[in-house]
Image (cartoon, rainbow, N blue to C red):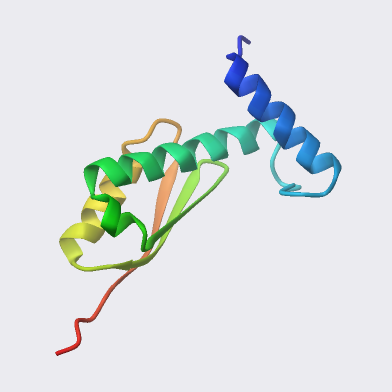
Length: 107
């Protein structure tokens, strides 16, 4: 398998972190952890560009074994649907778990 320099560096950093006990998930291989970091980064970037940077600050993105979990608060059902759709469109995403809440507006 061919890896880019950035991917090799990220893999080396992940392995190093695991060796000293940081960010190590025992249920994932180092390569899967790198994939999840890439997925999380891509989802966040795509949310910022497609949904809007101000909305993204309230959305938390987590990825484990390609399963992306979105949590936090959004202003509307339309924004929630858009965020889920954007996450699903990212390569290597297996499934999206929607834990987003619709924020109630105070009168």
